[in-house]
Every structure is written in C-alpha cells, then in structure tokens.
Image 1 (cartoon, rainbow, N blue to C red):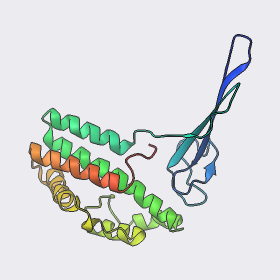
Image 2: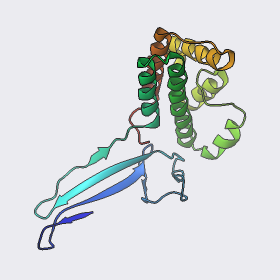
Image 3: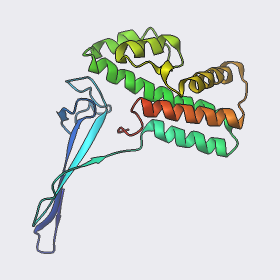
Image 4: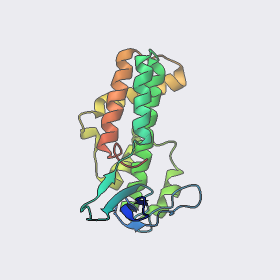
Length: 202
C-alpha cells in the first residue's frame, strides 16, 4: 500500500508478509479455498502470522511489527465475563468452556501438523466427540502428540472440576453460582494461555 503527496510522489509505503504461525513458512496472502484458510504445506497449521514492513520516501524503517488479533477464544472469554457480571452465571460457564474447546481444537490441529501427520487429524478425530481437554480420551491424545501433561499444571484441578460442572449444566440442567462462573473463566483463560492460543491470529 502506498501513500502519495499532492505531487503524486510516494511518501510512505507498506507491505505485509503472511506466514504460518507455527513453522513461519511464508505463504501467499490469498492462500485459501475461497472460504477457509488452506493448511500450511509444511506443517498443516491454519494459523497465520502477519508481518508489516514500512518505508518512507526518505528512509526505510528497519524491523517489522507482528500484528496480534483478538482470537475467538479471547472474545468468548470476554463474553463469558460480561455474562457473569450481568448475573448469567450458568451461561458464563458454558461460554468459558466453549472458548477452551476452540483453543484445544486449534492446538490439536497444530500438534498433528508439527508431528508431520496432519492428514491423520480428520480420521483420528472421528473417534472422539468434541475437543474438550476435560475428556480423558481427548486429553490422552493431546498428551501423546505434545508430551504436555496438563494434569501437572496448577490450573488443572479447577479446570477439571469446572468441566464437570459444565457437563452437569448441559445434561442435567443444573445452575452455576457466581463463584463457579468465575472459576470457570479463570481456569479456561489459564488453559488457553498455556496452549498458546491467547495471542495467535483469529
């Protein structure tokens, strides 16, 4: 993109480089099928990083800026907090865990790609329902792919208890207290940050 002065001379220009957020392979800006991003040909990830370089008519600005977007998990956590503040504690628990599930799904996609088995994600995932890491089978798959033992993390006991509460809300129509909602939001936030899905592109 160029910005010109009244004489039509370029006084400032920028260019943006799109790359894979996992392996940093440079990708075309339009690397998608018209609707969805295509997987990185190197690692299979669909998460993107965007780097902007700027240059003026007199000198070049060295270095680059990595653009960070608010992710869907972040947006859902913000929504969960608003619901909690508005007294909708039960719905807040559900939304907080939805945020965690989306982050987990994206992390699993990255993990399959990092292992060089991106083509196995779809057939393997067909054996599981959802992507909640509160589910022991999904968590075992995650641990096998990443060697990351979530049960050793300080937030895990609260997250596990909150996941059980979410399931009770969905299947047994129980309600949640404000404390339970805040615990869900806090634990889900901690998990999302641990998975590295708090500051990636949306």
